[in-house]
Length: 572
Ligand SMILES: [Fe+2]
Image (cartoon, rainbow, N blue to C red):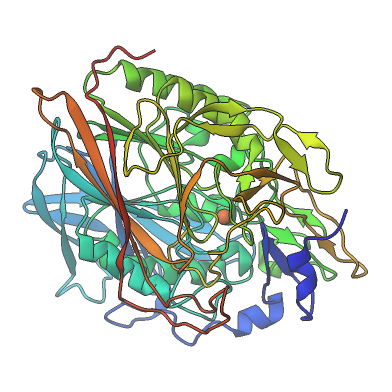
């Protein structure tokens, strides 16, 4: 089997070359990465202090509590251990819970804090401050506002993208667009934002993961401290030596709605805003693709001595397929069944990182493991919309329901194979789609990372759109370089008859969703979706080769409308 062609293109040293699905990257080696840490990684900290005793809040961000109408969580970190960390809201003082962890690669300890705020009123705006006894800004502590979700059927706006990274280009896959992307969220003033995985690519910067997360958190703070940002874990949240699935950096920074499963809290969850049930999933549990932390070699990856962890040998990848042993899928089915039975729910929107329907040519493509595991459930319970990231571009499917079986082709042999191709219920791009008849899939991996992937597959024989599909795991295999390993890309192709729209102009953008619950008299609900894109932001235009640059200028790419009847609780 050939090595991923992307791996063969670079003439650079292969030490610690890591593969991002279809794209591969040369991660900095352990020694050079440590030297690459900027003298000061702090972006928004307003006062300096001895880091070991500095309890100044930074990386401040909000998430919904279990009920977004009445509960919000304020989370943050500080350079050192905070003394009496707390949130003030009016007369209320809410103590924060400390959740520290020590990175399993460089041995640094990060202190995070989480204050759960309950008993809020729906649809109200609250001012809050975050501080501690050893807050260097104690005389003028960080303050902002947030707004709770409305009660019952109400109009609201949310936004979404994935694959954000940080603006600090010292880090692999980081890029300046990451800052403008956060600004774009703020410019649309959504009630909340969905961040669809691959948050900052800490795993591709394995000896400086806490520093990458810090830059990520400080970049996001300008929006995430004002409105909840709700994340899903992606393949790049999987880090060596950081917990059973590698999610410790992620889980330590976020407090998310409970899924009722103590051993899996934070990995998947649901919450309801207005008449929309949001379901956030951990797709690494079911995808075939192996795209987590990886040591390509030929050198081993050597954790800092203080961690006591052994060198990680070339050819090692952190593959977590099946980690929940079916628990997540059982939870998903129960959650969807209850959602469709609930008369207060009109819409079900799923957020996850990897893609059931991507025709990216240079990215990862689609994953049949994901399709087989979850799409039958999305069909059965009429999931309206599925938001992903993973491929760094924008693509929209027609509404799909059911499958066209045995219509794929194994790339290496030409043999026919079942890719579980989703079946479009229409191929007329009318601009209005009734999602009670079929689920619409959006790829929104258009956040801010440096690797734009806005080039899409075409069948050379007939000019039809074509998708690459993972039909089996792609575990590491020896590469032509002695002692080094690679991971192949998707093994099959299919005609992507489900693909309705692809943004070939840029890999950067943000989706804005305006939910209108309608009125009882017309019985219809709608979500107007507008994709804004950042023309010229691609570091290199994949078609012309022209160099671009980060830009704050987001303009409309397309608008479409989803409609469905109001829920009546008579679901399956
Ligand atoms: Fe990804």
